[in-house]
Length: 303
Length: 303
Image 1 (cartoon, rainbow over the protein chains, first blue to last red):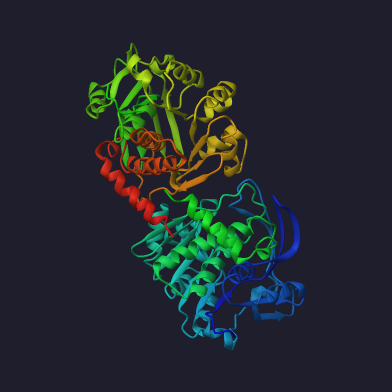
Image 2: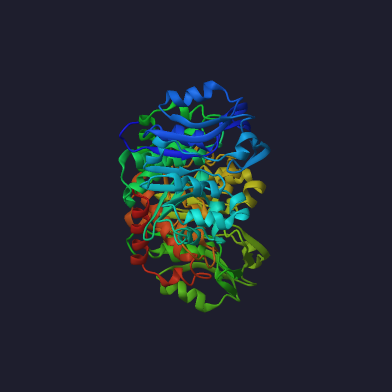
């Protein structure tokens, strides 16, 4: 393993069937860990811990490996890979789930390979909070750990979620989740309450309206990169998190000013994801492409 | 009249009854021209052209005059002042109208006093587009004219609206109106199409998500000032427009860079309006208060 600070992501790998403005795709590679790792790999070395079934296409694994992503933590189990089918209608911020087949993901029990336990930056993508906690306990003291979650865990396993929330440095979730977790209708209050739950920082993703970062004594906001066509919003949030964590690992700097910059990189990375169906656009870009959008984002918010 | 560049606003003056998170108020002064002029008067001399009924409280007129606002263009007609009653529920971006009584506003036919015809900056608030056009025709070549509109005129008097849109330099409307006027679901496309309708600039207000300005070859975005409590969203858009036009008049500079800055002033001014019921908070602030929020807005979008 390289000596550079490493990002570890634990999450889902899925086969997605999506109907979106960019067209229809069937059983293409998706899942939170996939989008996250592709985005993060633009910036820093990445290890994935996830599970796939025996039907998982080897080309998809090779695509990740070709980006230098460490896939030794991807377990292949007897059974079918997690599948998700969904579509988007007028509101591109809201996916309409048509079908979910958990397959081997139902029994996911993340085991962190020895090498990956030293990763300095850990991202717990949206999985059962009990598993998120078990990942944290396997790690050798990361410099920064962050987690995402979703309405399902907020309502069904609230106590377990609060326990792991209290153990991470940063939360990364969308606006609806932030409001649901805190019971606050005002997003600014929700943000302030998130950082009362334990983490030093909360990042809230607002889709086409950008993202917000709060710490105990600062507030940062970045617009979404303006796009005239959104092909497929799937994975935008995970790509955002990948850009955010990737930048932190690349710079190995967790100062508030650099967290703001990391949020901007997240927004820039996510803007590519939604321009193509599945991971096609995200997987085609370079760090220079991201830098270019970042510079434009800076220009368009300067006054 | 002062030699400084002047802002003219033509719009409604109303008596509002509002149920909002900040409480309930009955028959307090409101209307687009009221909010606009109070905000703009922080920056530059302002003239209002509007109509009220014989029942309009003299104190309200005096409140405007005490701010140096020229009210000679406010006609008092036999009958009742325009009244609006509404409430806000969970979505603070959407007022629910409970009652509208047009009163003397039904026959509003704006006549611009001689002195005010020389105003350099003209804002046509949300009124019948035929009246907006008649105002423009009474003016002696303003430096910059802008207009706001609403769904009612977009659907019922589309051709008249497009005629006056083609005659102004800038559009100021909310995101739903921009999408409706252009028939575009993607806001970025809608913005680009707005500037194809004639104006050089389009400003779109997005409530808690801030505002966007586009020109033919630039894009600028400003977040809303983060507030933990919104007492009453009424008038936020008109105060925004007042801050925007007020700053342009104060600086007498219509360069793209200064338009961006004007949008930021608009966002800062609007943030005060929503902190109080009716105009109470907006009418209590100074230009220094606005400058302070502007500086904070700048800090929180820098990376």
